[in-house]
Image (cartoon, rainbow, N blue to C red; front, side, top):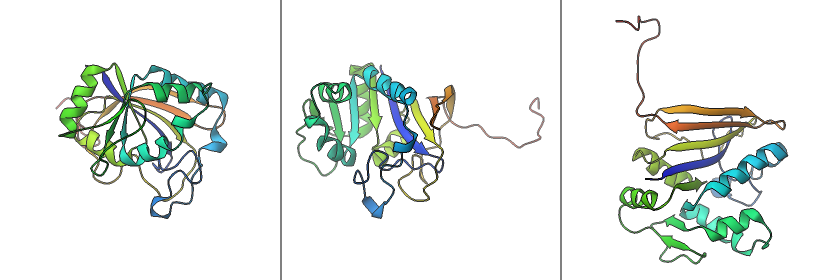
Length: 206
């Protein structure tokens, strides 16, 4: 079975909504679109490019699909990111769409968890971008194998969170941490089971 990787750009207060542009996602009156731009640099750009090159399938929620299908299919042919996104199979989780039109895109039928496990069986690395609502379902079903995030030194106070109230209780193991010159910090974690609990000051030998 392959692994499911969540790629995300996150503020210090956990917001992942509309990092890429002012009109990317204005749901709930969000006014901070494009907040990632001041922190982009060559080093973090290379990391993001590496994420895209490694994936061999995309899993998207309906809202992220709607945003991306309005842009990436028309990307210049020499854009390596656009070329990769357009080429890989894309799986879209939606309760409202009855068809998808992006090249190599298909709707997920039936039970989400069953379908995602089957998708992971077909690919080495299935990547999720954005898709805040879908992500919560994936976490509750224990389907996320890795988080590859870049955390940025900014607080917005509003917007969709990476881990909102009700996210499934999950423990992750740190794999990599690296700061970038413009202020972002790469944080990579892998799934490590369920949380463990204790009381501070207790003798761990007991």
